[in-house]
Amino acid sequence: MTGRIELRDLRVTGVHGVLDEERDRPQPFSVDLDVWLDVAAAASSDALGDTADYGALVEAAARTVTTSSFRLLEALAAAVASAVLDADERARRVAATVRKLRPPVPRDLASAGVRVVLDRAG
Image 1: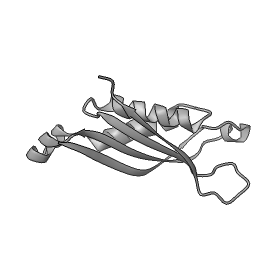
Image 2: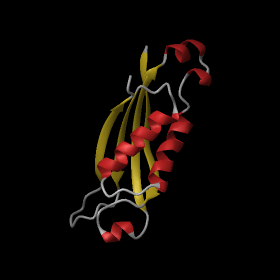
Image 3: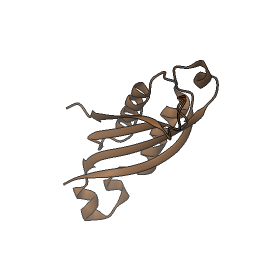
C-alpha cells in the first residue's frame, strides 16, 4: 500500500540566490515536501516505528536550507529532496518545493519557487 506524507510550508531562512544582495544575509524560504512510501505496516500497526518520522524529514530539509548555499532554487530543491531521501530509507520518492518568499523582482510577487521530484535508485 503506497501512501504519501505531506509536509507544508516549513519556514526557514538561508543564504541562496544569484544577486549579491541575496548572498549578503539570510532570507526566508518556504518548503513543501511530499514523501511517498509503503504505509501498509503503519496502517496495520498504528506504530511510529513502521513509518517515516516526519519530524526527522523536516529536520533534514531545514538543515539543508540553513547550512548550505546555492545560487539557484533548482539546486536547493534538489539538495532538499536528496537530504529527505537520505533521512529515511523507507522513502521511495520525494517531491520538494522550495519558495523564495521575497524574490528580488520589481513587482508585487508573493513567492518564486521550484519543485523537483527525486526517486530512490533501485
